[in-house]
Image (cartoon, rainbow, N blue to C red; front, side, top):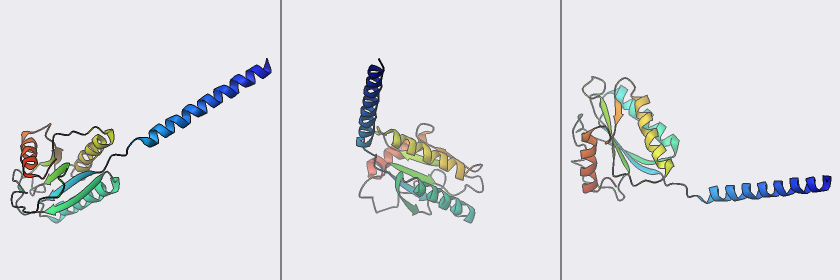
Length: 170
């Protein structure tokens, strides 16, 4: 009887170990999503806002979830198109464009536009990265502005359509 109990325990352990190895192998074989391409467009003019944009860029970089670049512009009021005068289109369109307007410190602007395309993303990691950038914006610019995306306002939805047509956005 003891021998049979020992066999059952041994077989149970082997099955458990086998299932564990299969689970780890399946998890390891899942593809890690490529970083999202992000463009930060900085139209701020004050030292305080520029420092906040720097803090946002540092937070974005620390996540490792984004391949990003920053462009500076003079033509970016709360509803301006900051990429209208840009001649250098990216070789590969961006997944997300964040438009940070001037006027945050004096209250003339209260939204930071998070412009996304049609979002054909299937990876939970990519959705988490998008949620993370929105949260980072809300934290860095707390009390001054909040992140607004195409699901909340028509302006970033219109910008998304324009930028997809021009080749800025996927």
